[in-house]
Each structure stands twice: as C-alpha cells, then as structure tokens.
Image (cartoon, rainbow, N blue to C red; front, side):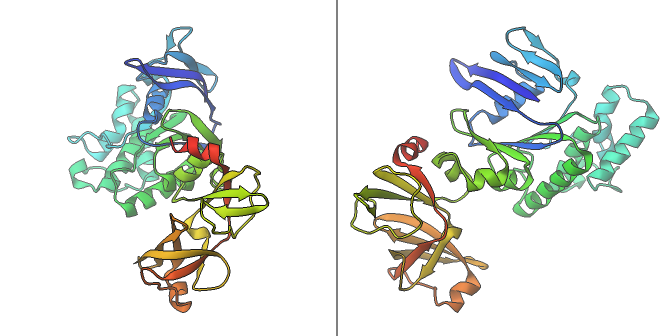
Length: 359
C-alpha cells in the first residue's frame, strides 16, 4: 500500500499534512502515536469513509483515492477487512451469522459461505460457539468474532483500529500474540493503529511513530526504533524515559546547572548543552562507590520488581530492579537515603532537539 502526500483538514484545522508512507505486502505495520494525532483519520481515509483533501492512496496496484483526480473507490470495493475498538458485533445475531454477514452481502453461495465461515471461526479459536449470541461471550471472544468477520472475505488488507483497548490486561496480551500468529499464518497485510507502545513493539514488523501534529517522526523495525530513536519524542513515547540535562564546561561535563560531575557513558555529541536519556532498566544502583550521587525519594515494592524514584542534582528519575536482586544486595532503600546511580546505556540528544520534542 502506498500513501502519497495525503492531507486532511477539519473545520480549518490541519489533521494530516503531506503524509507519505509505504506498507509492504504481507507485513504487520503499526501506526503508533498519542490520542488525537490523526491515526484514526488516516485509517478512515484508507478505508474510504473519508476522502483526502490532497494526495493519493493506493492498495496494491490500484489507486483507491486521489484528491487531484477526484477518485474515491467505495469502501466495500477496496478489498478490506476492519476491526474496531468497540467490536461492533450484531447483538441479535449468533457467532456464525455475525461472521457470515459480509459473505451474505456479497451473495456468496451457501456451500462456499459455510466453508469459509467455519475456517474463519476455527482460525480465531471459536469452534463450538457458532450458535452463541454475543451476550453469551466474553469480551475477548467478542473481539475474536469481529476478527473472524473481518477475515472471512479474504481481504488484501486488514485494518485494526485500537481493537484491544476494551479488554483487560491479560486478554490484551493474549490477543496481541494471536493477531501476530494469524498474520504470519495467513500472510495477510495488517495496518494496526494504537497508542499502546507494548502492543506496537510486540506485533509489528515495522512501525511509524506519529507526533501530536500528525507528522511521522520515525519509521522502522521495532528494535531499531526502540534502540536508536530519531529524537527525544520517539524515545519518550516508546516507554518510561528518564532525562538528565548535561552541560559541557571546557572538557568537563556536569549534570544540569549544578556542580555534580557527569559519571557515565560519554556523549556522542559536542554541544555545550545536552540531554542524557535512559530507561529505568538502564540503571544500576548501589549504596556507595562509583556513579552519580542520588537521593531516594520513593521506593515501591511491586512484587517481581522494585520501582525507585531518585533525585539527581534536582532532577527526578526512575529505576527498576528485580526484587530478588534488591533483597540480595541490600537495595531496599528508605526515603531520604543516599545512593549511587550507574548507567549501562545512554541515548544522547541535543538540547535544542530535546526542547522541541517536549512541545
């Protein structure tokens, strides 16, 4: 699928502007961004529920929307399947009838309809539940019905718009792995829209991070984007992020405006003002020895891990360590205790870039 220079305005406000993106056949591609950034608007443009004000959209070799040419292929002729956040299953129809609905609209013959519905229902693990109504199903099972209904027409592109938001944490985790397994088994192209970083990292072959203005900040494989973020916005959006201001004075480095010397990986940038970015898992703690001097502000035992809030030269950062390690190394600090913070990995950002990313 190719999106070229797509723009969309509502009431004089630009939602998307000159957005271009290529999605390869057979990949699971995720649009990841904050609420209100235009992800769902782009999904609706691809589905044909809206028309672009500029640019064009092609699925395969077919142009399905073009602002210049005035072309807009109807949604039911684009070869798409779509799953919404709220399931949108018919409450008065059985599982089988919900799944069969697109085929009945397409006047599919009875034998082919039965075969394809049974196959789709089996794919999502609902065998034996064909006669049940949605009210007799769990939330996860209802979402599977919606997924089977989207798959049964054998679409060339499957659009998933925040489909797991209404599920509890355990079901979300289970369903995200099932969606990825289905995508690999069927070789179908998936465009997944979400603001959930964990889901995006878990299921994507590639992902695109959008900012609140609808601009693409970075496109790449999950590991590439996570380990080599283009800027502070991407780094911040892909998980809990700590930022320490660092200034250069001649050859020496200090944390913020204080006289606390920087102790950690050397910067790969040469500006006078820098930002050191790191995640809670990049922090090693000790009671004494080498590292940045810190003061413990909060210690939270969370079962498998301990979460710390630490003040370093006036900036608070978070750290997380496995509980068994904390107990074995006497790292169950009390509020106000002094500590030492060592960093295994640091992402360096220019101060100017960091400032823009916070807008």
